[in-house]
Length: 133
Image 1 (tube, one colour):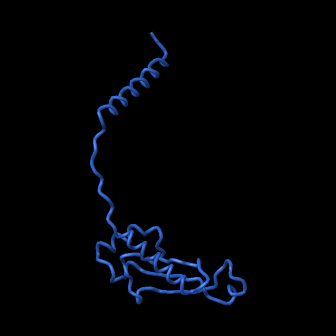
Image 2: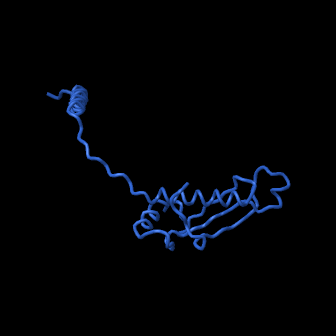
Image 3: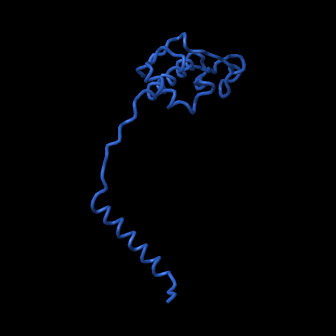
């Protein structure tokens, strides 16, 4: 699944009633799960990983806390597993360093095409000019 395992003591769980199918069961069971985790206070990551996670996941953080909710399943247990798996996948994806750009050069023909385009455009503009002489 994912290569990260976050310690249980760093996770905060909240449960509430879920919407959607389930009939009367929905009205009585707290099956919706909200999982909260603070990347700034975790001991599961190195300093480099923590910095990368904070940078990559910054749009999803509220007050420094990442919250994931799951109400896909009718059972609280399966929603807990789904939320934890999604959190660990997010963290694993965020800790992967970005691929380095391989420097490339524009080909000779592409440069030639660009010059031709610029010359044509220049000619069009030159032809529009009024002759004031």
